[in-house]
Each structure stands twice: as structure tokens, then as C-alpha cells.
Image (cartoon, rainbow, N blue to C red; front, side):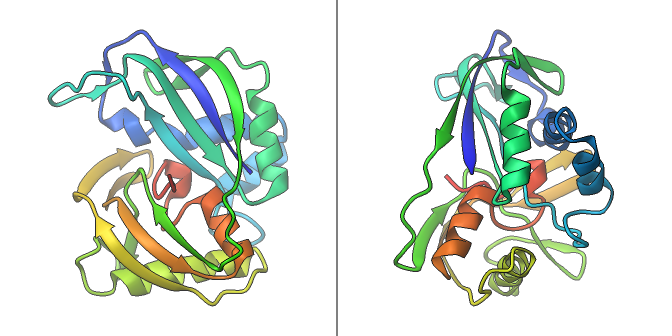
Amino acid sequence: MRFRVDVESSVACMEWRDVHGPARSVVYDLIRGQDAHLAAELHDSGWRGSVLRPVGVAPPVFPTAARRKGAYATTGPGMVRLGSPVPKIAACLLAGLAGRGELRWGGVSLPVRGVQLEPTPDHSAGSAVFETVSPVVVKHEDRFLVPDDAHFVQRLTHNLRHKADLLDLPNEVEVTVLKSGRRRRFDTAKGFRIGAPITARVSAAPALLDALYEWGIGLATIQGFGWVK
């Protein structure tokens, strides 16, 4: 399940470090209000004995905000997207938003104007083109990779298979990168992350494609990376 949170902002911009930096705390705060034990488990150790945390989030975007050099524009209507392929986690996120008047995203207060469920596309063909709206993060030997680097596809494929194993889904996956965006570095509460947005064709079991659409691809999805458009 994934959903869109319609928000608004009265400030002109936020610090670049606040684009991805607050994402984890926003997610844990929403879950903690419904299930403190689940929030603590995800925070401290991950899900079901894995270091993975099956939660995706896309940082706030403001489509009509005028671009500002050196700043992340936040004026006017915007949206935050969240999701999880685990019903228990998704339900906590959704319940945590019910009646919530605002999201505190770092130093910016975002009044909530509505929450809408987003339907999952039909993946019955076993192939999907995923375009990410935030950079995809993968690593090889403690080095962040971008799509032109050797091992990028290998490590991304490994990540998607790892996700499948955690969810008890078929883990046969093929990835072809069709297009990639600019390399970007972002600061988070867990240190910096480097990646690039991509468009990729992913062939896998339909149930896994559904899960990736709800979770995101690559590492650090709970920090706002790898969210699928």
C-alpha cells in the first residue's frame, strides 16, 4: 500500500540538508503513535531479523514552486508520498496520518490538506519500467555507485533480490537501466548518501513488482531514496 499526503508550505525554501535528512524521523513518528514496539524494532534492528526496513518515502515536492538557486523551493501546494509492502507497517503509517494537522519536516511545518491512496499499477506481465523521483542508492565495497559505474546493476539486482527474500517472494530479477539523471549528494541523519535518479526496466514476479512499487528500489528507502514515480 502507498499513499499521497497533500501538504502546503508558506515558506519559500528549506535547507538542502532537510530534503532527505528528516525522512526517517517522520516515518518513525507516524508508526510510533500506533505501535511503539514496531517502531522500536524497525529503528533498532530492522524487519524480521533483517537490516532492511520495508518502508518507502518520497521527500516533499512542490510542483508550482519557482526554482531558487542554491535552495530547495517549497512554496505553495506540495505532496509527500509514503508506502510499505507490509500491511502492518502501511496500516500504521496511514493511521498515523489520520487526523494529523501537519507534518514537521525538519525545520518546515507542512499543514496536511488530505491523504489519498495510490492504486498499484497492473504488473501481471512480469515487467515494469520504474522511474524514480529520488536518487537510487547502492554501494559496492563501501563506495556509493551511480549507473555508469561498474557493479551498479549487479548491486541493484542484489538489493531487489534481498527485498524479495525478506518478503518471501520469488527472487528472480533482471534489471536494465534505460536512463539516469545527475549524480547528487544528500545529507541524512545517518550520514551522506550519493546516488542518481534512474529509469529502469525490471523483470520479476508480479507480486515483487507490486512490492517494489510500494517500497522503492535500492538502499536507504526509509531516508527518501529510490522512490518509484
